[in-house]
Length: 88
Length: 180
Image (spheres, rainbow over the protein chains, first blue to last red):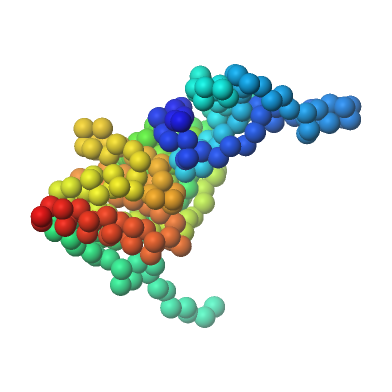
C-alpha cells in the first residue's frame, strides 16, 4: 500500500502513522450539547468500502493528511493536506 | 557558568572509507528552524534575499553566499550556516544547532548505498542539484540533500552512532560487491 503525500510524493505507507476517522476534524463548538461531544469522541462508522481518515507523515514532512481509501480493496482514492482546516 | 567539555557526536566515527565511497561529517555550524508567521511568507523571502536565499519550495535546497536553506515540511525550513537575525519577528525561529548531525556520502555508487536505507529515488536524474527530501534513513527521520560533493543527510544527534553504523554497513557491502 502506498500513499501519495501532497508534499513528498509517492511513499510507502509505513512512513505514515494512522490517527483515525475524519471525524477528528469536526470538533464540536464550545458549549455544544453533550450528545455532540459523545458522537465526536465515541461514535464511528465502520464501513466495508470507502472511508476517509487522518494519517500523519511522521517519517517525512510531518503533515497531517486526509486519505480517502477503500477498506475492502486497500485502494487509495485520494490524499490531501489538512493544514488549517481544523483551525477556527 | 562552568566551562563544559564539548564532545562532537561523531567523534571517532567519521570519516569512513570503503572503496570509492567516503562518509564524512558535514554538520552545519548553525541550524535554525524557520517557520514563517501567517501572512509573513513574502517578508521572510525579502529578509533572506541579502543572504542570496529565498524560502524554499517543497523538496528544495537553496545554496547562497551566506549559507543554505532547506525545506523540511509545509511552512518550515532549516537555515544552515547562517545567522537568522534578519528573520526575527517574521518567523518562529528555533536554534536546533545542537540537535542534529550532518553526514556526507560521496563517491561513485553513493546512491546505491543509500538505496538500501532510504526508500526514495536518489539517482541524479531524479534527485539532482537543488533537491532535498524528508525521508526515513532506516527507521530514523532525516533530511536528505544533494550537494555537488555527494549526498548530505541530517539526522538527530542522538542517532549519530546508529546512522553511521547503518550507512557504513551498506558501504562495506556495496564495496565488497564492486571488488568481486
